[in-house]
Length: 165
Image 1 (tube, rainbow, N blue to C red):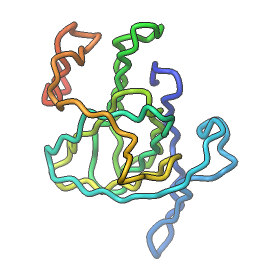
Image 2 (cartoon, rainbow, N blue to C red; image 1 turned 60 degrees about the vertical axis):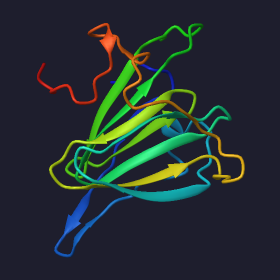
Image 3 (tube, rainbow, N blue to C red; image 1 turned 180 degrees about the vertical axis):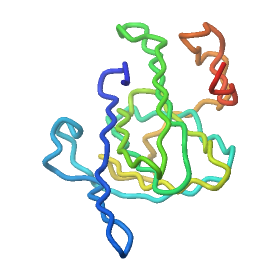
């Protein structure tokens, strides 16, 4: 269960039949997930195996909702606000097409992803703020920034750390 305020994970129900399956990926009546947000844009992203897309955050309140529909992905959020009770805590969620979930990440947290499946990951993600190419709501830092500390190990977060160690 995520420890950072506002980070949420909701299982998505798959309804299989002889044609394949159907799922509702997002509904406006999922109040416990949306926390009053309105989805205004939906994007699709494909990442090759081992690809890391990190770190970035949204200072103007954007919230991201990720649904991995192919492959598997590690989704991480990191709180670097010294005034926060969860300062230096990191949430790590493994999302995959095998177990459909929607993962909510408030933009105030530094967040990123890594494809952990041997095949490319395909992610549908929805956002609560429209992207503005002329004035993007994104701060960025390097994927291997040593200032992002793993609270468990007290060492810089290692995207490539084996999951069993």
